[in-house]
Amino acid sequence: MTTADALDQGRMSMDRHLWADAYAHLSDADRETALEPEDLERLAMAAHLVGKDDECVHLLERAHHALVDSGDVERAARCAFWLGFNLMHTGDFARGGGWLARARRLLEDGERDCVELGYLLSAAAFQSTMAGDYETGNATFTQAAAIGNRFGDRDLISLARMGQGRTLLHMGKIVEGLALLDEAMVAVTSGEVSPTVAGNVYCSVIEGCQEISDLRRAQEWTAALTHWCESQQGLVPYSGQCLVHRTQIMLLHGEWLDAIEEAQRACERFQMSPGHPAIGAAIYEQAELHRLRGEFAKAEEAYRTASRHGRQPQPGLAQLRLAQGQIDAAAAAIDRAVGEAQDDVTRSKLLGAYVDIVLATGDTQAARSAAGELSVIAADFDSPPLRAAAARAEGAVLLAEGEPRAALGVLRGAWTAWHELEAPYEAARARVLIGRACRDLGDEDTALMELDAASWAFRQLGAGPDLAQIDALSRKAAATAKGGLTAREMQVLQLVAAGKTNRVIAGDLFLSEKTVARHISNIFTKLGLSSRSAATAYAYEHDLV
Image (cartoon, one colour):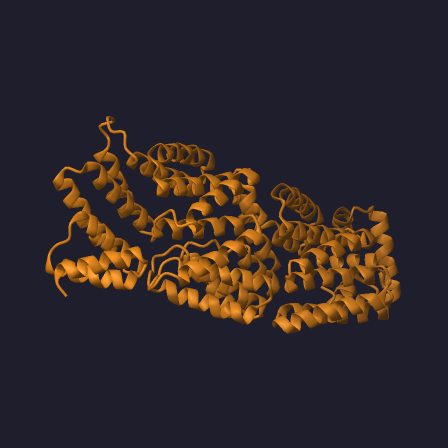
């Protein structure tokens, strides 16, 4: 094949999205005769799409220098933008920032009116967003979109619309943000944008939907991304993120064994791009699966590895500590994470775990506040999964406050919502609390039925720690029945065993000290005990704490 034939074949393969073929033919042509800048850019894109990121950078550098030498400053600046964009997305922030600075310098005379200015604005907007300044990011993305519209550049328009949508979500403007994300996706699914932009928009939009728990959109766009990845011969980037999103959906729907395989495939795929920021998300999902299955050592190692790759390990690590019985460590970790989270999107991912953990410490007041905040966020986001999570949190708090009848109605609503979302694990967790509420109301038969149903679901999933929790509840029920304690007396006994004074117990349970003293006297009488230390020993012997 002649150089001209290889070049023609490479260009045709690019048009047909045959990236491996395009890379092979264009590389052959380049070895014979150095490619012109336009074909170097094609070869760079093909190299990126088959996972050869270092070579992509080298080819873009060659194209950039050739364009500078020929005096085509604007196209040289565009090359520098993509160099910076790609490097920053693979974690090389110093080099990426350097290339973006070079692009700005090339255009800094202020007299140029070109679309490349919009690309540089979008880069600045991404940097503001990564720093948590969503308002500045949104304003800058809006300017970039205006330039894209003026020049009719669909790639820039889609990138800017995606950025506008993501920043609006973090600003609490959910309806407006989702509308812009959907608009960006229209250009992607209709094939109006380049493959690099399409892959980035796909992954960012799905991540945004996951952030606000819009599972319907996340599932629809993940299915579309899967189809898109499968239609691209030799595609390496974006397929890893696709597998991460598929893992998250499988985990929710109880397909844990398949989710483990998808998470492993995602990690293997990211090994081709070791600096990719999404690798932390893939490893975090592995950690979550290990935690839920009771594989605590593997979970801890995975959370630490995810953290090394830049993924915040909370709330999963705090939930692991709670499952291990390290309540103080769990409380410190989740309290720090919630304290640092400034926007509703981030807080919505933490508050459900926060409620569970602070209830384990006996701080019902903090749990009440967090459950209320989660309910407000769920209403603002109009998210069925968040509403279900908020209902479960509310029910758990009502149980802790000694209001089982009120808790029961809320918890049944949570179970219904999770059941309709086909989320068996979360539905089973709601049934555990329903069983506790029925038991507190004296309906032992219904309590046993609810706990049995939850136990069956956990067994099907392989959720070992949750099965152990139900077993502990059964032992606790047997001890309670033996002693004849009421639900409130059980709460008081648990707090006594935790070493709390009558005054502290009164504050925790919103009772008078006189009422607490009466409950303790009744406990001593029913259990045949004579001291707080004996009551503490009884509680530990019967797994009541």
